[in-house]
Image 1: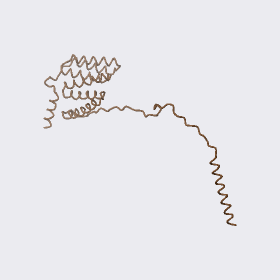
Image 2: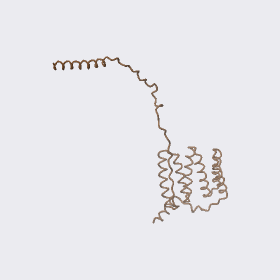
Image 3: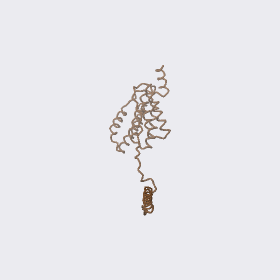
Image 4: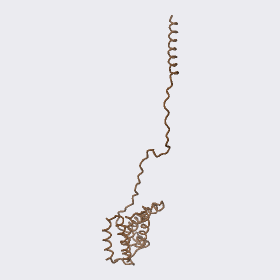
Length: 210
């Protein structure tokens, strides 16, 4: 009797399992709508991070005015300028040339200062950097005045004044006019014999180091 009950139970379990499998197997298949393919295959609609142009920091040197410290600053700026010219970063290189010129003015190395200011101006004009061009012209005027060429110094300041007015840089006008009056009355206190060149500066530094 027990054996018969066991057979009946096993048959009922198998039948219920078969019925579940049958209902699953033959259940109506649900068709989902196809995913729409993109029509625009460009990358314009992809989110992109905003690219910011970071300004290159121009090194500033705080030092006491000695030949040795100026020489260190000159070497550092020269390396930066060479790097920027090599990789065609001309807009920053023009500032490097102006910085070198300022160092040479401190040492009465007027010929070198004039040369680097002219190089800086060549680039700043091409880059339409009127502010730097005006600053260079004002420094050129000081250099030329010290070299005894007051007429060209006044011409540089007149050009700086014209650029300022033409480009709405009116904040420069007062400073240029003040410098123009100074140059008109200025008489060089440094004689040509006191002008220094790169070799002179090196000799002076070597003597101090020895």
